[in-house]
Image (cartoon, rainbow, N blue to C red; front, side, top):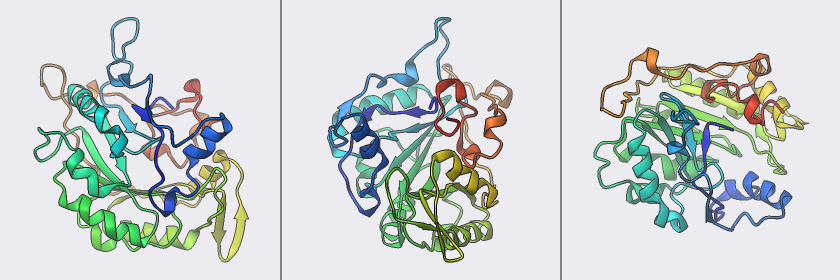
Amino acid sequence: MHDIWNPWHGCVKYSEGCMNCYMYVLDKMRNQDGSHIYKTNDFAYPLSRNRDGTYKIQSGEKIRVCMTSDFCLEEADIWRDDVWSMIRRRQDVIFFILTKRAERLKECLPDNWGDGYENVILNVTCENQKRADERIPILLDIPAKHKGVMLAPLIGPIDLEKYLDGRIEEVTCGGENYGGTRACDFDWIKSLHNQCVNKNTTFTFIETGSHFVKDGIHYRVKGKVAQTRIAYRSRMNYQGKKPIYHLYDFFDNELREDQLYKREFSEHCIECASKPICNGCARRFGCKQCL
């Protein structure tokens, strides 16, 4: 997808949520080893340009970083400073940073981080209550302009409400897929939805996962399209208080709304639950939700 930047690929399994990691499954399908960690050919993607000299990533786009690895992976320490340098240089683009290794997050920040970059949202992934209670307090203690929580794969109920004090801007969740058989229960989703509504925090239920339980009945949901369509039809997504990102051009002038990228969607996106977190229809790029 065009809204993903993977400067490195491969990971080391870290906690319960990693057991059926989708990246490992997809790499195995390509006869590759998911534990092999390497710098990718797209390392400098934020600085890539079109033939006319414009950046491929437009001002105002939101780019998800390290979706086939972990941003705070120890093996990637040798590359991370260069990544931060590119993020700082592209202060007109929003970067979504995600990690399970919350205890390493602070040491992985750049020296000039201060109270955070205006164009970065820091996120931790939590698959159950145990990991939420471990990782979210660490995130909350770190200075940052924007913070979020990803609950995926959701493999148990989670009580988040005590953490939703206004510093967490968005909560995103989804079930386990790509060969994982641990079911996501709709009761857990409804509880999270209600907690976020109570605290006016944006909540996005992006997919059911391959196994989904509703009213005690276990369903096998085949394919990402069906999983996100069912999530959409549940009407669990909620738009809370919208975050304000201050983005700047090369000359440090703050960009106006009319200068920023505008998302566009096609008929294929109508029932896609990921729309709230998506850059817009990527069908021409081979969007997995559309195929």
